[in-house]
Image (cartoon, rainbow, N blue to C red):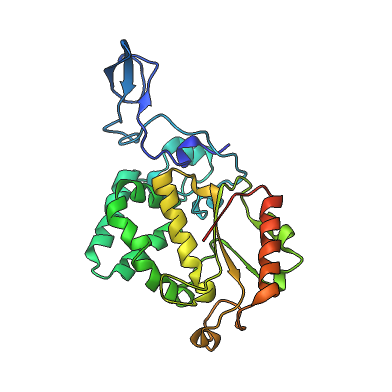
Length: 294
């Protein structure tokens, strides 16, 4: 079982069952009144490796990954914030620098980089690079600075992100379904590494924010939208799935672009289009996934 501190602990305060004299790693407690009862509320530690941390966690995920596999998986990685016990238990002591920088310090470092850039697209490149290597810190940033970062990960910046998506493509995220996958879609769904999917955002790339037909480059929309759902709606990042139905494109520029990542054929029309969509939906519901389509 993966240590719960690897997971999403996004800053909830903990209600403690101990008293001030409990030997809990330099944590302090304050007394609050609720419904005529007194409660001891645990405050975040101010020093040591627990500095800035709460000790109330959501249930941990069960995973088989250990060692470097955790550090290279953005869903589980949290950079230099792993505590000493975690580094031993999860088998990667020595694979990280010895000094622990907690999430708050890492957050300040990334914010500094973002704020030094004047271009919104450059800001987006920085934060999406973080998304690709450390989702814990990525979502921590969004939760704490949603007003500042929402325009960077979604409108108005996401339009330019989609236009440049193929040229900037670095790492797989989400799923793509195309005409060549007909007859295989129900099986393809099992390739997604997470079973507990609650929200799927789907696009066919035909009308992206007034920019017209961007085909498979429209993947930037589901990714950005689901990031906001996680930050503002409290959905766990492993429970979302961005999807592109790549039914071709009528955009001549993309049809002739050697770096375009989608199907370079004219867009499906009529029954062929609807049959593809129908098979996709049946595949999703066969896995009891919840679809939120745009």
